[in-house]
Length: 403
View (cartoon, rainbow, N blue to C red):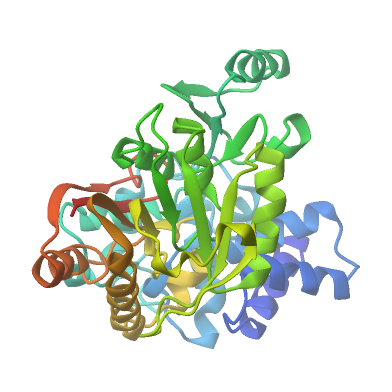
């Protein structure tokens, strides 16, 4: 048996054991740690085969006896250059490897394997999509690895670009602060993360155009679902004079955020542990307690980067597409409406709400926008689906309201 078959068999073994209850990257790390016979090249090839399989989304056969064919189909559709595995096992595909994905899909009909392969089945929920999503192009995007994007922080542009030129790495500078890089670029090996640059997707960086942060004004800004704090750092970079409050329901997240803010040079802020899904929001300040209880405070800007399906980012984590259940759309939509219902109580008259998701589903996007307009009578100032699937980036949704 050739080592190509060995790669396939190992990938099949991994895929049969993985049930989607943790990030696949974490599962793979554990697997290879327990199976040390695989060298560096082996691990890379096996991992790639698994991810190619997941990029088929819901178009897989879901039959154990056809798992190998699914893996090879994924490899064929994800590859743009001749591949030694396909040359050995599917030479007729390897000859056509440079064709567009749509044309290659027409070749994936070997009869005994499946009656008909349709790229539209990769992401079959067309009727659930937000406006402006082009279904077929969105499906095709899953076979393309997204790029790495960094945002240059204020005052560091010259040295960041100089170092890229010295490294002779291919990059694209996207004004005003965004840089596109190969996905394999190790940003942490060349830059001080969160000080010089922030690793942040292109579409996420576009959110800055919707943040009504005014230079020279000490606006009270609440990043209510702060997570890793990317939106907070972005708001601070637009105006270091903002009075920043960050919250999350997980104290561990905020402890990590405190470390990140220290590296980013953000010193003055309030940190709150709160579960915004509850009717009666309970606050517990774990940073800067002298500022007092924030429960009665009103904010001129609230950033609500709410929990969501993350469907706009699945080209980076295709295992989530593979295991997705549409019941989660309703669940997240319910949570999003609960959160905005609680946070709007703390929005200052004349203030702004920035609602954003990394979802492509209308029930998480336009439907929530309509809910906010109808229940709270906020004025919708701007709304956009930032389609990143044609740019090797994520897709995000953002809406700006005025109270």
